[in-house]
Image (cartoon, rainbow, N blue to C red; front, side, top):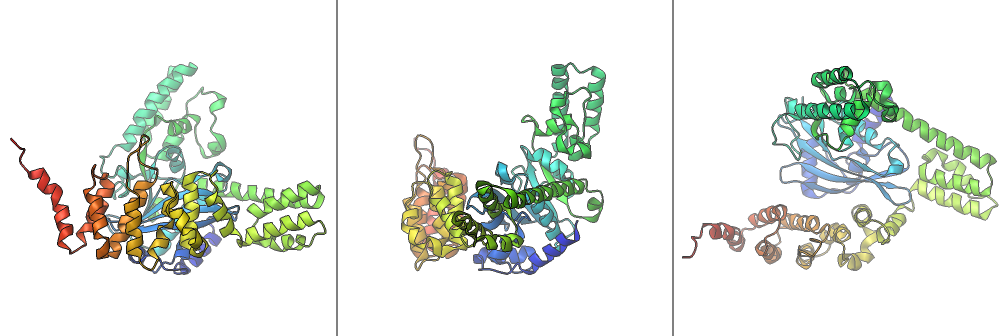
Length: 511
C-alpha cells in the first residue's frame, strides 16, 4: 500500500474520538471492539473515500443483540444527494479477532468510477492492521450479484473453507461448506451452454472445464478462458490481470450462486494477495480521470465562452479538491455577475457551508426516491439536529415510514423521550394493506422498540405490551425485539405477557 495512505489512516485513527458521543450502548460496543473511544465524526471520517466530491456520514449506529456494532454509511454529494449507501458491522470473530462484515455498497452510476468501494476496502484493511485486534482479523461479505466478480478480483477467499468459517453476519452463516463446488457446478453448466450457442469445439470446452475443476480460489474462476468466445464478450479493463471472458461472464451470471467471502489479514495471505494489483489499477484510473476532468475545467476557464466557463465552474464545485479554492474565490469578483454568482456557489459547495440546506431540500422534495430522502433527513437529524427542529411535527406524521424514521434520534433527545417514542410506536402499527405493510414501517418500529428497551421507562410498558399482544402477531424480528424489551422490566405484568403465548400453546384442545 502507498505510504501516504498508511499515514492518512494513522491520522484518522488518532481522530476517532472526535465529534458528539454515540449512544451509550453503541459507544460501549465500539470501545470493546476497537479498544478506543469513538465519536460520531471520527467514525464517519473512518469511511471517507479519497474522492473529494463525496462526504461520508455514519448513521443508525447501534449495538446489536449479538454484541456486534452495526451502522449505515451514506455518501452525500456536494449537491445534497445521497450517492452511495453501505452497511457495515464490526463483529468479534470466533477466536476474538475483529471482523468487519460489509454489505455490498450501492453506488450511483455517475460515481461508480470514483473508486469509493476500493478506497474503503483499503482503509478497512489498514484499520484491521493498525488496531491489531487478533490473529484472524478479516473483511467478510456475502458475494452476490456483481459482488461475485468484484470480490474475486479483490482477492477474497471462500470463507467456508477458512479456519474461522463463514462470516458470523452472513445470511448463510450456518449453511454447510460447499461454495466452491457450487461455483464449479455452475461453471461447468455454463461452459456447455456457451459452447453450444457459439459452436465451440469439444476440445476447447474440455480444456475450460478442466480449468474450472482445478480452480481453488475465486480469483482463479475469474481467469478461466474459453477459446472461441466472440469479441463482444471480451474481458474488459481487467484483461491485463489475466481475467478471461468466460470467467467474467460466469461470475456475473444471474445463475451463478452467491458465495461467502473473506479477506484475511494475516501476513501469509497478504504476501500473495491477488487483489492488491487490482486495487492499485482501479485507484490509478480513478485519480487519472479526476486529473483529466480538472485539467479540462481549467482549459475551459481560460479559453471557453461564457456558458462553457459557467459549466466549468459548476463542475469544479462538484468535484474539485479544496486546493482549488483560491482560484474560485478570485472568480467571485469577476465583472460578469453571473460568473461571480456561480463561483460563490462553487466555493460554498467545496467548503460544505451550504450542505445542510442542500440536504434539506433533497429530503423535502417529493420528486426524489423516498428511501434516499429518509437517509438525507436522517443525516441531518444525527449530525445537524438543529436544522430539523422546526420540521419535527410535520415529519412525525409523514405517510412514508422511511421518512418518518429520520426523526427518531430527535425524539430521544426530547424532554420526555419515553413518552415521545412510545406514542410514535403506538401511532404507527404494522397494518397490512392491499400492497402489504407500509415500506419501512417494520424497521422504524424495531428501532423505536430498541430505544425504548434502553430507556426502561415504566410508563412505556403498556405500549410495548399492546404491541406484543397485537393480532395478528408481529413478524419474527419485531417479536424478538419486543421480547427483549419486556424481559428487562421487573414489573410482573411484563412477565405475564411473555408467558401468555407459552400458556396458550400448552393448553389442551377443547373437546
